[in-house]
Length: 354
Image (cartoon, rainbow, N blue to C red; front, side):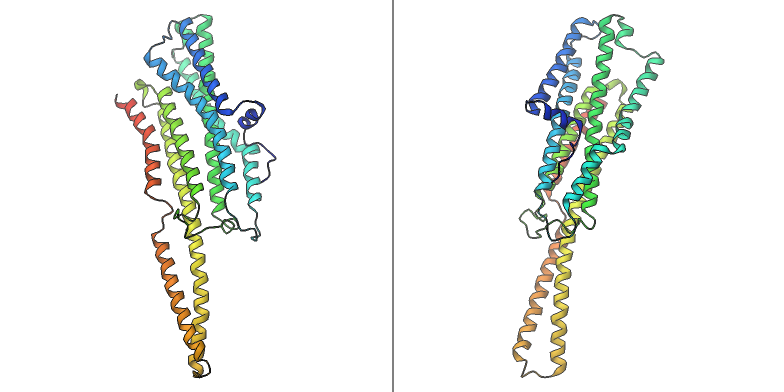
């Protein structure tokens, strides 16, 4: 597959650093935590107590996870779609779709609009809060360290939101890709084995990719709830924003499994249509023999054709039964999704009621 552009700036950054990206991400998270600890020594109003340590740790881990997770998802995305089995004789090329996707990632103006939509409302809320007499570290403790802590805290907070916007951008583009895959000419380009042992047409790697993204996404939201949501302002813009993010995750899950389901059912429908055409041809041949009345000369064919028709009917009914029973997912898939979803939900409810 072509590789003219990097997906996002994080990938370009990691390529320039001669250290594995998980280690780089861990170092970044450790530095963020250490600097907060340093401020706790210098700023009296920022005590290093249990509540603050939990928030700082969650935020530091979140940013480290976002950096590493974004790169991991991009790597896994390339691997997943590279391993899809394709029909080379089909006129369309999956490379064309891949190039279109990479162009959307790297040069689309929608990326900047999404980043602005995520970050700007928080900036506006912060400014209005200060103008209305909101508390900042510098206001309570007007020292250089208090001023620097305000700057540092805002930079880290908006950096987290920026990385979250990139994750949303990845999810939206993968959703777009699923939608393209579900339409001609790409729908017929992917090889589907309707009798695959995974019961989803050999698309297990695509399903697992969806579940990996959701697990990563919901863990990020959980950490954001711990670090951002205060029990004293649970019904805030931040809370509603994170609820919307949870709904985005649910929508992505439904969209992804819907694509797998449609691809598989479309392939089954193609098989049924092929059987129907063959069935019609042999049925017509059988009727021609009967209408001609020349049984003696065509006795062998007269015995063979009904057998073929019967076998086609049996195969058609077998595939129709498989078509009716196919859902594109299994109980394990639903359980994994529910577990991923329930973690941030329980964390939010814990903040709300405790």
